[in-house]
Length: 485
Image 1 (cartoon, rainbow, N blue to C red):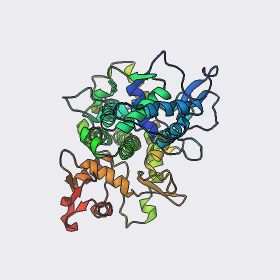
Image 2 (image 1 turned 180 degrees about the vertical axis):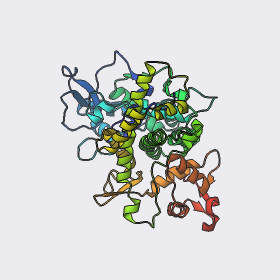
Image 3 (image 1 turned 60 degrees about the horizontal axis):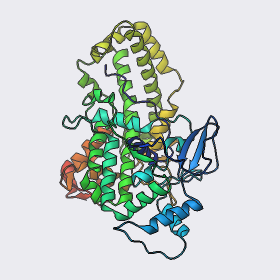
Image 4 (image 1 turned 120 degrees about the vertical axis):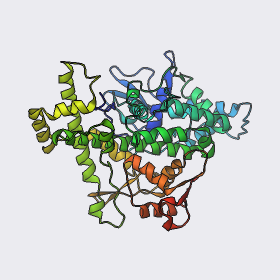
């Protein structure tokens, strides 16, 4: 029965690179006989799990041994020696000690610093670089959420091409970085020396199905949603043409933008879905078909006119309220499905029929209404995921985040206010296929799948600011959009 969406509960991810690193750890596996890596002891402290972070401060957890994979001392010597030896297609001439070269290589791949800490990941430009950190090391938590599993589930729900049923987000990423390495001898050499010099050749490609097989049962049931958008644009960005078109760091920025949007808007849409189910049950207004049920989910993130007041445009309270209600409905569904499944199998019962049964359970419906009205909130981790997935992290300085869509306005308000770079990513990937152009209507359609419906004039202004709009402003949806690369 397709009511409770197949997504595990997420948590706040402090750096966007973690999402790509999670896909990397799904696409590659550590050999059982691999040597220990990272700065620290050869054996993790008793009772502690081992996590990895590229540059990590001294803060440790009671349950996690965080090892820094940024090389020091002899590690820098080893990295410099490996790089100076070079490969047949890349000869390196250096002056000075190998340690200086190793340090230059190590620092050249630093990613975005984690706010309020000394931690810094490696930019996941290649397989080896993406494997230099993991969720346990980044979050300093023994049992962090499996972000790759969540992303694979969302990809599976949105991917419904019968000619490639085993396609996966992790597999597409692995293929794309392989194409990148084949055409970039410098990055290929950095990947080689990092894999050998830091990771001790301890990782090999994982075989078999990398996707989420359970979630594939949901494929095609949720058209025009963030999940369908994710599956389409991820296949687009990981295609050979887009990998070749974008510089390596820009490609990573675009990839993390897609993954952030998928996590943030995916869970926000999930909450809107549960709100829709609650309305259908409480009001005894279940639509005739499942397709109508999906089509009548409210847009999860209102994008109000730029001319509206700040209080009208504010989405902070709406997001919090929606997620709080969504988690309560999800819990209610879990309980009711568990009780009903003890009496019969629910697998063959149509979702709309089951909802009508739930609507007839007056006592349980009353408890649902009371639950939605009280102030208890169990949505903290989901709320942090949505907030930090969509909101600009740092608004200024060397680590400015250009790829968020939400911006704080004072202490109270959060507005939908995308930057030029964000608009560039979303609009460019709306230009599907071999054409370098699409229309404003195509961009609006993609934003609609994401659950946002801006005014036409606001969108055209953003596209003009990005230098992407071509043609007369009075052409409405037919204004031509030129992709950035």
